[in-house]
Length: 452
Ligand code: GDP
Image (cartoon, rainbow, N blue to C red; front, top):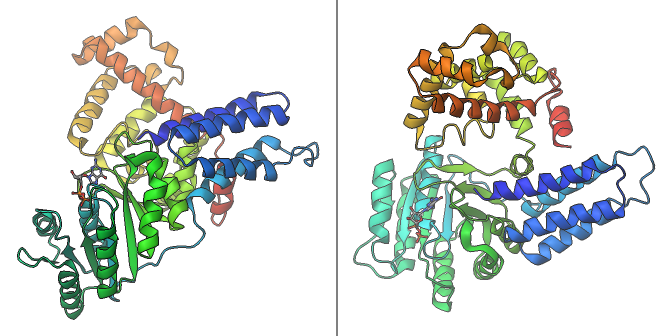
């Protein structure tokens, strides 16, 4: 996703500032201007960006910072906090409770991914033990009911709709009524969208809302709508009580900054993001890990929790030791590939790291990726111990690569490609150098440090 570029630009700006010998007003301004440019290019609303800049300057008052203060850290932390603040409206959305009936109404423009997202939302909860149901109150778009029906059938989720009835309010009320009687705990109402915001759409939404009394209204927004996000989100918020946002198509080429603007416009948090057309391409959205990843800091708190959760106790020290040394050898890569293929505990941990999962094993192409990993492993089988254990990629000169290619019956081009992959992963691994091995209870302190 293009948000990664935004993250890249921001972390580069911070890095450049860190390279400066003295951090004065000029250096700070340059850094902030760079960040401002990156945010604007990513379609974040102008006013938000300006406010952020002002806030950081207020927090980081260079004159007041006594010598000895780590200015870089303070600035970096301020940027991190401000980005989090942009995405976090300060109050959580209503959260439905399992076993207790909640009505959740979805609104958004046509094509935003609303119908798809309703099913994803239902499916996600169903997998977690809920009893969801879908109501199609979209009588405007021909085929909307068929689409919902098809998706719901595939996921084995009960649904309600009508080919004959043209009054969406009536259908919505009947559907909700029926599923309440059936003791469903999550009744999801899909409403109609239009190509553009118009009075009729908003009036219809208001009526459906009045008839179904939703506990939560979710605004679904296509991440590619750019600068229009703020106005669009605000228009919806003014008509119905939007309580949460879901941003779709984060897998595409969208700049994604619109998501930040939508949060500001609705004062509601983003709760999930859509990352593909498939039912399970849907992720819970958490602000802090997201911003950490955006700034290239990795999701440290989640990562450490995962290590403690899934890696057997006796293997934890060894893994953490290797991580803290930061030397990523081909042998470690080989072992990690073995784990990923088995999807054993360590494989699960590594699948959380940016780069290990998204690029090495993109969703939907698992088979291809597995074949690639197996190919790499065959090539590594032709390596000597010295090659496998050396942390220096320069050791792998052309004649060694030729020998490996011959030995494994592969083309040298493929060996070179594998070495490129190795270097890329080594870079990610290297970021963990110096990782302190936390004792129980030290986890939050560690993630604070890593995020600072
Ligand atoms: P609606 O008119 O708002 O109900 O939109 P639909 O649910 O019909 O979705 C419009 C199109 O967007 C469909 O082709 C969906 O498959 C696609 N879509 C929805 N969510 C996502 C997503 O997260 N990623 C991608 N790539 N496509 C999506």
